[in-house]
Image (cartoon, rainbow, N blue to C red; front, top):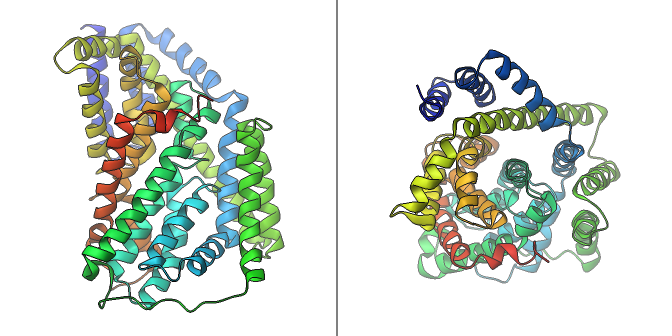
Length: 437
């Protein structure tokens, strides 16, 4: 049996193990160990798993994972999401479908201090959806807006998916963060246009009646200032320090976590018990992510040893498909896998195969990473998996709200993301200009 055949069998075995319910990290370790065993021998497999564990997890850079996770959880607990929504609700109260636009803007700001889409979906399903339905928006539209705009959490920096991609592709985390700014702003603007278009052309989709009533919330400018300053301060502290070059990503994560802790304490939203729970959850998420990174590194080395990625690169790029045909196939595969498994798992399975092909195609790996993240995020909104949709359903705790209604509400935003994906595909500078400065 040739090494390339072993590589194909390893991929098939991994997919089979995932389908029968084995955790993806453990499945990757088992498949990779057995693959190296058959390609070389047992001694090489044992040495390689030790080397991978050391090389993958001993870098100073990986401290960024628990720091940004901790910052996101503290910000979520502090109630900043509600204040962010209140600010934009007040500013956009005169705009038709203004609460929908406010939700997008608030999610974009919240994304810049959390980096996790599920956190955004949880917070705004409890904050924005009740407010929107109270003022005459349909539940379908309200939950769809929250689901759609929640994906900004993985695109606008800091982003956990960007960190995972940077590690797997050996790109700078700071540059990947910068690359998410332009596409994140573009996607926010596109969501806003989508909401305004739906309110104009399809009012029955958006409103219970012909029009929603407009909030009369009119708290004074001083209260607006009080609600907005903590959010802006934390953004400036983390992203300002990062983009100015004054802080590296790990230092920015540390400053952000400390700032979020101060914010949560000052707002009296932390108890000793809740703080301990946040620390435990941070540890659980961090260990899960780092274990997956280690497993993916082992899987990537096993595939490289088999020669399968190089064979695929030569086959795809020299044939009639060509580089951009490969890109379309890759994006389509990412979206299809999004129907079934979570975001990080998709990246860990596909990138070890796709990255060598992208390098051979002479793609800019930062642009390729942005395209990958957007395609992966589409899977959060599509059935049957649709993690953001199920998160909203769980957080709402409303027996009358059907999952199918949320999926239908999110569908216009899926189409919007596909349009944005095409735009960035034709104009890579949207993703790369800031990262290359």
